[in-house]
Amino acid sequence: MAESIEERVARLEDLEAIRRLLLDYRRYLDGKDFHAYAGLFAVDGEFIGGPGGTIRATGPQGIFELVDGMRGTLLTETGGDDLHIAVNEVIELDGDRAHVTSTWVYLIRGEGDVPEVSKIGHYDDTLTREDGQWKFMARTAPMDIPAQ
Amino acid sequence: MAESIEERVARLEDLEAIRRLLLDYRRYLDGKDFHAYAGLFAVDGEFIGGPGGTIRATGPQGIFELVDGMRGTLLTETGGDDLHIAVNEVIELDGDRAHVTSTWVYLIRGEGDVPEVSKIGHYDDTLTREDGQWKFMARTAPMDIPAQ
Amino acid sequence: MAESIEERVARLEDLEAIRRLLLDYRRYLDGKDFHAYAGLFAVDGEFIGGPGGTIRATGPQGIFELVDGMRGTLLTETGGDDLHIAVNEVIELDGDRAHVTSTWVYLIRGEGDVPEVSKIGHYDDTLTREDGQWKFMARTAPMDIPAQ
Image 1: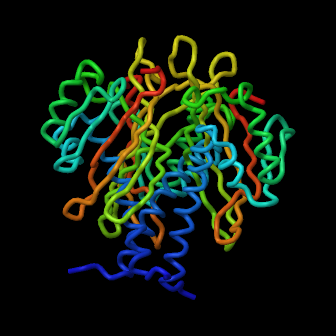
Image 2 (image 1 turned 90 degrees about the horizontal axis):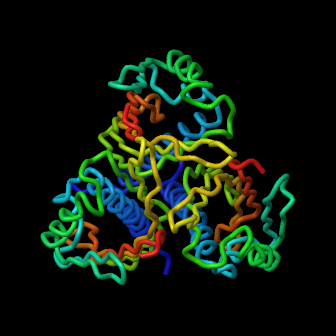
């Protein structure tokens, strides 16, 4: 059951689209464009973070409110004072679903205006294709260092 | 107006070629191969850096001279003493042009021979396809941390 | 001698498969799944590290024993206490072989439970396609900072 060229190209396009979703997430988060950020989640998509997964929100509006409330606390107030790097993505496609793991490294403007590696963690994602667009169905974002 | 398989494959090839351009830039820069580095710019390509975009050069020869002059000042004298990581690339294709943003993190051999995150910034690029090769039409390289 | 669509798609698939190999390497290494890690090497694949390439092993079993012996010394005892980021990959395909260079940055849980950039180095890889799967024929992993 060899795949057709059409199926093979569609698979490659899915990988590109999913990488782009991961990178848009970081871009909107660090750009403090929290509306665009929240729009990357499916209608009933979930964000799960914090110690033991205790920080949660569901749906774009709830997720917008959650992340907007992190400004000045878990995130810096001002764009350019913090930055995620999103790397090490491993993508498992499964039709209109996908499972992805990746690494995030959170850097901030530290004392004396020098860069500081502040936190490291990973993402465990379930993605879904919604109206032809890959979206986050569930993004779990544990912090690894420091320990939560 | 569905795209043909040929068009879809060409788009995927463009994404690969553009990622390769970004990675060759870093490779030649950190390898201190400034001739190869300058050859990644279009004939009338521009490099724009420094506070307020005040560090500028146009065309491969001018860009070679600019970067060669950074050796021992903005860049280390010796290869292996500094390194960029080039990540977070977001690529927008537009025919024979493309717009790309990405993140650079500059690491150096610090005091006591330990790695040090020295600077963080981003790239805003306009690319052009010149004789079938993607080249930098304009690369703007603002530093974010420390502030310029 | 234009390439066929089939050849062009196969090339794109090879690039994806090779990136995945590099990322699985990191994933299994940091997950301390050293059997899966060693299985990424060809039957007669080699790992070459250490000062002057003096740390060597050949074949999955030998490589498993080598990396398992690094636990608690060159690697942390416990998963989650260390992490590689694998970036800057430049892939040159050559039929059933490939040459790849990339950058590794090794982060650890430092004093006071804060992230610390511990080491930086690079990989020089020769890959081979073995039974349809890309594997490491030779992975050389020099450390750059600190100097070996």
